[in-house]
Length: 165
Image 1: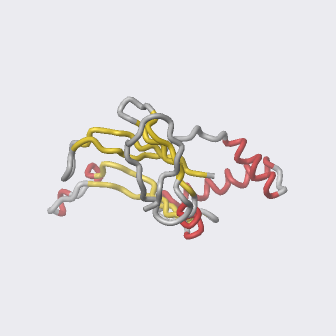
Image 2: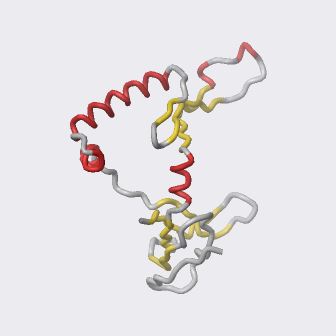
Image 3: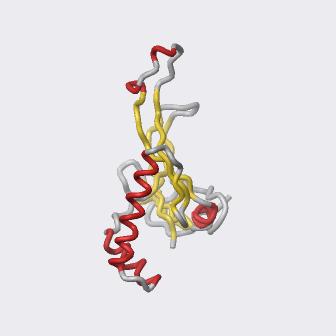
């Protein structure tokens, strides 16, 4: 299994060195249907999909209730989640009000096992030009930080590996 990443040539206008650069982003996968998740969990556990769905729905209600009360909620096997806000800062006490909040968001912190799994999963990079044409494809080695050569050299569908430097 590999995580798919796109490196596309873009005009970068901000920062210290503006110009054309390869910008990476995850290649978005199609969503998996909920019933497929329950069926797969049923296969792995020997518990019926209906029972798993009922337990998951109940856990979801508890998580939603506790999180909206301000708790940090453990999600067994995955990590923790909590709600957070982004807001403007003000100098005066009388200026503090809810209208300063610009975004309410969910903050998820994965546990060590999930972080390690992600860190050790190989990356498959596809390099594209500005029009979306494939310039290069390759896999990185598993583990560690995934740096490497994502340059736009050579045309065509080069399936050579992208080195981890």
